[in-house]
Image (cartoon, rainbow, N blue to C red; front, side, top):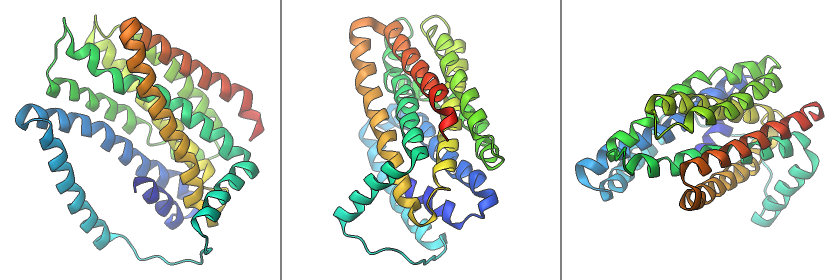
Length: 277
């Protein structure tokens, strides 16, 4: 549903401001993901883990009503496609649009890195010698919000034709972020610095990716977003599975090494493809 809102906002926005609008909406999504960790940690300590799902269901119901009330009614000519035709058209878009293929691959890599950190972070923070509470662990999401807020201008840079430069700088920051993150068990301040850098980088690339692909086919923005988000979700799943497995065998240093390798691959991929679009 959140990605449908991104495509909808891009459709309503003026072409000159589309990147900025996508940046604002996407930042809201990522900030919500990060704030949810803080919110869930507090709820868990106060009322147990089930309360998280009960409160989430209530908030979702309220939000559905608010969106129904405030979102503008917008109609446009659309193709009548069966589900199979729709899936086939996604494959066609990937075959025809090089930018979509490149940016989807970047999404897979950056969200693998993102998930490597955020899925496994609870493990060293909850174990001795740190042994932090759910509330304290969730509070690190606030550091991520700082980074995500700092990246909101990425959409404006994309509007000005600086998307490639923004991507390159962000991927370098993503790679650097794993150095302070690797000191988590010795310095929580270093972890905070690493989180800010990582979330700034991931958000900047994510906003730039969407700003670029949503200019390709105005009549197929939802399908472009859907195709892109498949790779986003794959990256999130791969990062979650890989990081917890690595932690089991090699501990936090192994997780950080994995994050560094994935981030380096993302930067290398960008360097090899930056002149292709």
